[in-house]
Amino acid sequence: MSNKRLSYLDMAKGIGIILVLYGHLIYTGERVRVWISAFHMPLFFVISGITLYMGTKDEKDIKGRIAKKARTLLIPYMWFSIIYFVVDIGNVFLNKITIYDFKSNIIATLTFAGKSVMWFITALFISQVVLILLQSKLPDAWVIVSVIVIAVISCICATYIREVYANNEGSLSVVALLSLPKSIVRSGTVIPYVAAGYYARKYYDKYRFLADRIYIRIITCIVSFGLCVFISLTNWAVDTNNMILNNPWLYYAGGLLGSISIISFCSLLPSIGILERIGRYSLVTMAIHLDMYVLWAGLQVGLLVYGICPVSKVLTTVTVIVTLIIGCITGYIVERFFPFILGRKKRTSAT
Image 1 (cartoon, rainbow, N blue to C red):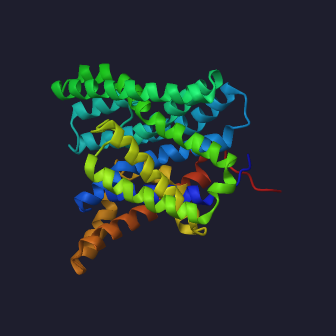
Image 2 (cartoon, rainbow, N blue to C red):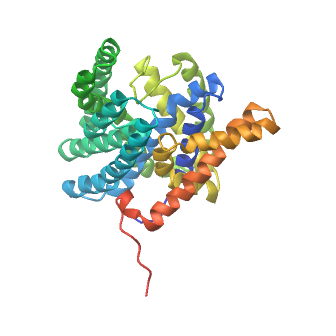
Image 3 (cartoon, rainbow, N blue to C red):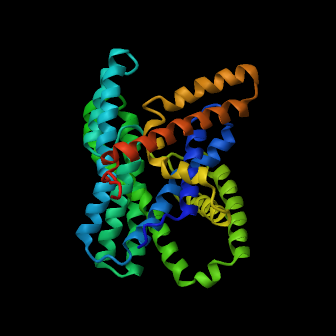
């Protein structure tokens, strides 16, 4: 595969992380947040499936493919988790979190349930590895059947795990017992999105002569967007992290349709450098925006501007813009000077 990045996928990730930030702001309208929740995380899993196909479709070395995923996902998980741990120590001394929260976060990290947004990285890793292993043993038709079975079982298990958590709130032993199963089950609920991205790209390549027609992409974008809005307002707010899916069929329909609408929309756009850059650094922005108080810092600037121009949309927009600026600057610094955090080697200048 060529190392050239697909600009429309970077732009889709850029839109995705923007929606994540809006979704985490209580000042965003409730219905908008409900709509965002339907697909903002599924979008990243669908894109990961697309890039999984494009990056490994010609590779036969299963161990090499898994090792590559471990390097690019688990290493960032480790480094950001260490940073979270240091921040949590400060939070304990400042009485911002309790000792129970501190211990729970350590358990979540060690069991791959992930503290805060780190759940996304482990779910991405596990779901991709499972898909790679299935594809190494089964034909595509049986892979798809297996993915559906895994998703059904995971949705059933998710209900029981949520009930146990709800009935034993505050029990550290329950957290320790269920953190690893929760991580595995959560990964099972998202694997359909990874598989959908993978096979959508595979058959896109096969029927490119049809899929590349502009009017088809426009129709796909409009129809999928409209259906996603309708489904999201029907199924109401969902939470992939905590496996709150409401109606699982509507959850998957909304997640897939929303992802399709964003990806189709970006494929129609010319290359937008700023949006590509935001997408390129989306993992770093995702990792730092909550627990490292980047979104909070953006909100403080937003509140200052709101004092001058008291319009809610101005508040949320300024907050998101400031957060993105900090995220992109941090992403550039990490990529340029500390690439090992992302599981990459430092680039050497040509001589």
